[in-house]
Every structure is written in structure tokens, then in C-alpha cells.
Image 1 (cartoon, rainbow, N blue to C red):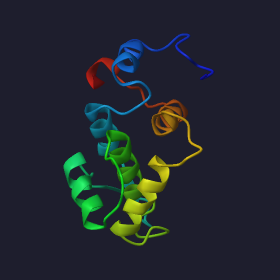
Image 2: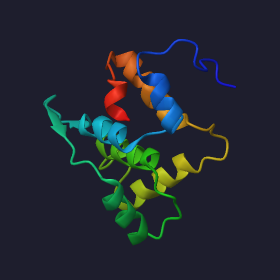
Image 3: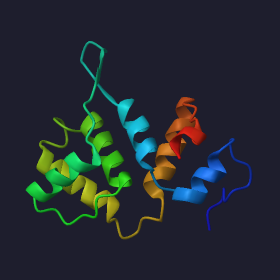
Length: 134
């Protein structure tokens, strides 16, 4: 059982969790992904063009990856694109494999991807308007 299982949450978060559990809704995935960027050597931010669910499904099929594409998977794909693509992840085929590994991790707990995202929001001071994400 989760240690933070609905003790006291920000306004609207309980409703969100009631609909989606510890997973991304389409709106939450889009909101989070639009904030992602690569940092240039100059320190300048270069915002990525995020994958949509549809564009990531095409990518997964192109590389014959076995993955049920959820909004959690789309979030991981965009995070990987912003943080690793062109560095430790060389191309989109390997990006799709990375997402498959994260989503299908046999020792992961349900909601791991969203929980890590929420922890990042807490750590960075990024407020979420939960009502807008439903």
C-alpha cells in the first residue's frame, strides 16, 4: 500500500485520482509534455515538439515494439526525448525500446511513472491545477 494513500491532497487531486488513479490523463500528459525542453550548451532552453499518443503509436509500430500505448507511455517518451535522445538514447527506435522497458518493468509498482512525475513537480515547485487535468 502507498504511504501517501489519500491522506491530504491539494484541491482537485482526489477527484483526479478517482478518475485516473496514479496515471496520466490526456490533459495531464499534454500539460507536462509541453513543459519539456533540451538544454543547449549555451544554457538556452529548446522546447521539444512532444509526441502525441497517435504519433507515438506510429513510432512503436514502425519499430515493432510490443507496447500498449497509454498516456503514461507517451509521457515517458517525451521525457526521454527531452532528456536522453541524441545522447544516451541514440535514435527513436531505442527511445521506443526505453519506453517499453519502463512501462513493462516487471518489478515496478502500479502508477510508478506518474508518482515520479508528481515527485518532480513537488521538488521543482511546479503547481498543478488538478481540476483542469480531468
